[in-house]
Length: 316
Image (cartoon, rainbow, N blue to C red; front, side):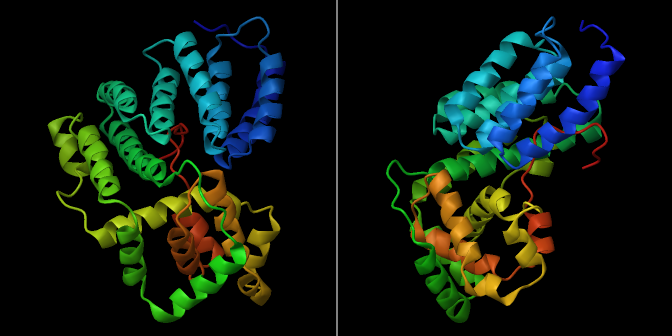
């Protein structure tokens, strides 16, 4: 059992932990590393304290969101060694470790951790909390499976000016449905099949009653798959676009005309695609076109990434 912390340590943690959580959500790895260093100094005599291990989960999630997959993977493996296997910290680390393997396209290895995660969630007695965690994890698994399939070994660099020009052409010539279909058709059929397989595998691990709530459709149309791919890239790009401290967000919120004319969206999506090794130009163009239709508040609320780690006061 972890020792009770002195009041001065608790005061410091109340200051540092929210900052670490916020940095982790935005994938700000350098900031997360600095905060983690400060938190570690508070636990020099207790390296296995649950507050330290929880902070490490947030820290290594920041690495995952920054696409530093191997570093994040080693971190979650170390947390699993230190944390008790019946704790939420262990469960979170297991889930995020499975996500690392999905991102690396090591599907069978990912399934091992998905199975361990879901079977442990099934033991949660509270129906509301169990369903909440099940839903988040199934949605995140689908998101990560698609993101992993979009990555290429040697993606071609995309020019924001070209993305911007073609995105405007799409806006003027095609409906959302046509854009989704175009994107769905640009990806191999095997990507669609694998995404459905992983989600179906995950759902079938749930109790029968819960399966009915989360079961995937038996078939997924090219248009619906295209829609999910677009949503995946939007969520991946959320951090580059929705930082309320950034100039980009400020201009977007104010609806400044030059924001739309100078290709800020195209630049942000190009940066996102480069970070996650996404090389499909048709995808970047389609996402940019649809992105232009949103206000800052609409987009940043709708596409906020799904967090596996749920705060005690969160209701859904």
